[in-house]
Image 1 (cartoon, rainbow, N blue to C red):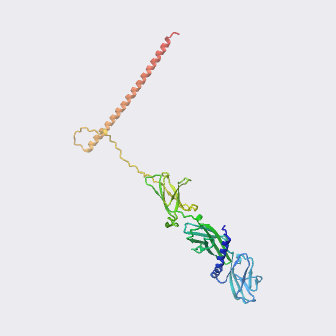
Image 2 (cartoon, rainbow, N blue to C red):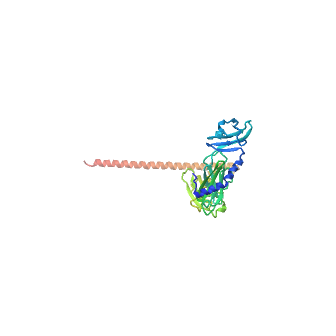
Image 3 (cartoon, rainbow, N blue to C red):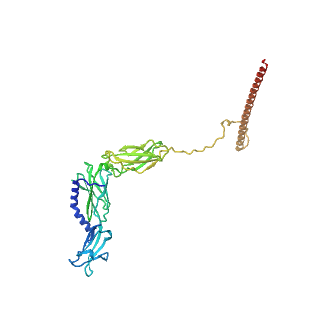
Length: 400
């Protein structure tokens, strides 16, 4: 709810309104056709027939239909407790039915307070916008201004786009952070001013950083390099005098917890503890580095990236070599007239025979080993039986 400031501020605003209110009202009237009349909803409105002679009878019509005579008095038409249904075209006629004057009646409400909000994206501009708290249904103009010295020096808050309900304060004074902003709503039924006090430092809120990108660090599976640019509304020439602090937050997708990093002046940061082979979400925000009680910007849009992964090389299949070095023996071979293919066939057969012979020798050795073990086991069992029989004989020979 916007509040009015001190009595001094009210007097200043009243003075400003007195200076230009008459001009504004005439401006609204001249923008409309000459036979338009404005009135307040729920009030008493009187229409006068300007073309009629004094004392001559007059007939009033509303949208072509006659108006009951009891509503007229000495050539004037009086409407009580007006509603929107009474808006329209009124005309007055003489006794012969000749048109004397036509009037278009428009009904609405006087100006009311407006809700004002201001944003400060940098030290050079302040944007203030407003919304009506009560619809007037009438053509409306706004006069916008601000003061930095308790109302003594009034400067214009420029409306760059008429109808947008926004004005811009350019290059506000640096020697104070407190400003009075005045938005005056004006329509044909009067004017009303809304004055708020703003603290520029508390409202200072940069726009989010732009151009955020994330790069992999080659050979580092837990690192990500994040780069960004200052917001376009915070020009580079402002940085030496008004540096920015940046905050970076990141998390692996699926986690509800953010890790944060901060830097001043730099527009890049390196994440050192990213999860290996995980997709991460990264965002950046900014704040004025010199005014601690200023606001952080909104977070930038989310950028997703994954740390560097060692490239996976598909294994190549090498042909298996079935040749055995210890079989690579040379034997004296008698020279014959056989073709090379025949000699290769003989060498292959010879190798196969040698392999079969070795396999047979191994099998014989294994078989002999098994037989030997069985014989040793049988001898041990025979010795145990003999020992038991000897013990039994000795026991019997002992006298009872």
